[in-house]
Length: 144
Image (cartoon, rainbow, N blue to C red):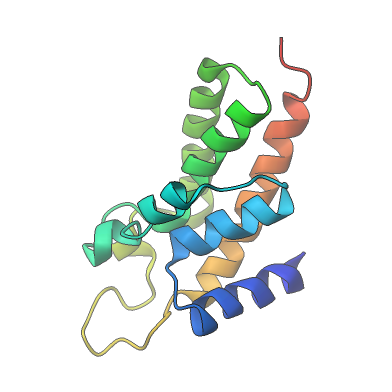
């Protein structure tokens, strides 16, 4: 899985030049066989720390969006999806020590930063996100 994620992130960052939230959504949609509408992809355009402002990390935002998308697609009750999003945020923060892009990004935000500075973090976080989604779907595979 690590090699798969690393290859996809590299492609999405360096060939397609898309942000972390969009890369996250595309990788998750591919792995879990969920079609993303163009509007969802468009909505993620500025979700890399609120357009570079340094607010909530796009790796978090993309996964929160995906939990909602896959939850609805699988018929999981909204309240369960909302609870899963809160649980995910707690776990992400425990693992990575923050939900904020400006704190997670290795050098913060400076004009002199190289492109795609978060590539290693992106790979690690997306692998974490995949594990969370797998667990979420296993727990709720037969919704009531």
